[in-house]
Length: 119
Image (cartoon, rainbow, N blue to C red; front, side, top):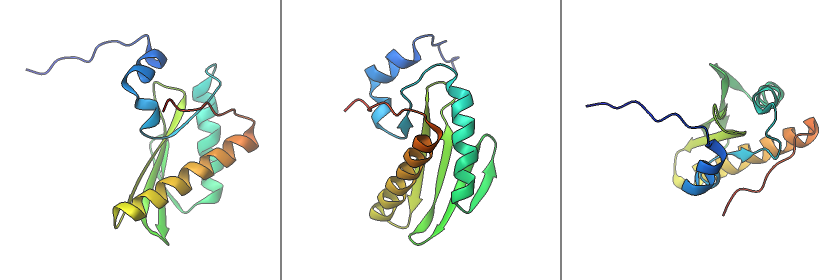
């Protein structure tokens, strides 16, 4: 029988406990108004990539290396999630690293601080 998800009021603490911060994405050091910052980052990223619009996210299409990368604001945590898929695990890792670096560059240009992910 399906059960409703629990209501979380401790998102940031929970992210540290389950180590979700280190799994995907680039995390912001600033928690206040993080959703507004996420929107600005996504808009600025559109200038740097061939992309397909998704609701509140973008999908980057790459020919070299071949693959797709989805970049989206995390709806409940102050961060931007980067999910990449290429023709091989190595290609996926390259796409992931390149997209995360681009997100970091955009954040730096927009003056949004990055927080170190929990290792």
